[in-house]
Length: 355
Image (tube, rainbow, N blue to C red; front, top):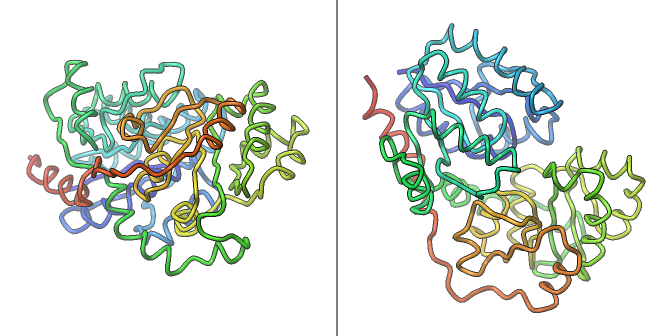
C-alpha cells in the first residue's frame, strides 16, 4: 500500500510527525513538501526536531498570490501523483497545499484523506475556510478531531467516510511536550521567567494588510507585561514597509521564527497567548494556557465554549480590557480533542479501507 502525504507549512509538518511514524509501519509512506514554507526556521527544522522522515519529493512553490502558489503546486503535484499512483493522498488542515493536494488527486481519481476535517469558522472571507470546505467535499476519508467537526460535516450533508479520531496535535503534545521542556533553553536565552510573560503570534493575511498594521502594533503596545513575538517573515516585511518595525521592537521582544521545541517550551510557560493562528489556539489549550484570539471567528469553538479562549479581533482596547480583566485559567479542562491516539486510529482506518 502506498500513501502520499502532501505538506507545506509549519502546522502540517507537526501534524505529519505522528502519522509518519504510524503509517510507515504499515505502508510505503511518502512525504511531498510543496515548499509553501521554505525557510529553514519554518521548514526543515521541524523535520529534524520531530524526527520526521525526509520528504521524498519537493516542489518549490514559494510565495506569491493564492492563485500563483496554488497553481504552481498543481503543476508540480500532477506528474508526481501520476508517476507514484498512490492508494491514498493524505492532506492536512486548510492551506493552499491542502487544497492543491486534494484537487490534484481528485482530478486523477485518487482517493483523498483529509486530516483535521470538519472544522468551520463560518467566515468565507478567510482563504483557509474556503480551502477546508472544498477539501472536505472531495475527500474520501474525513478524519475529524472532535464531535463538533463531525456535526459540521453532517450539517453539510457529509456522513460517509467520516471518522471521529481525535486530534493528531494531542499525539504530538503528549510525546514532544515533555521533550521540549527538557531540551529547550529558550526561557534562559531570552531572560524570561515562567508565568511572567505573554506570547504573541500574528501572520494571517487579514492582519498583515496595510490597514491592519497600525492596530497590530497598538495591540503589542496594549500588553503591559513582557511580550515575546516570534515574528513571521511576512509580518516582519509588512511592518518594515509600513515603517512600524521600530515601534514593534519597542513594544515586544521580537525573535526569529522558532522550531517546535523552543516554541512549545515558550508557550507552555507563558501566562497568556495572543494569536491569530488556528493551530496555536489549540496548542495553547493543550498546554493549559489562556488564549486571546486576534480574530472575529474561530474554527476551534470548543476552546471558546470552555472559557480558555476569547475572541477580541485586532482591537487594542479589547485586548487591554481582556488582559486587565483577569484572564484566569478555568477550573475545568476537558479532553476536547481525544486521548493522543489519533495517528494510530487513522492508520488503522486507512489499512482497513485498503482495496
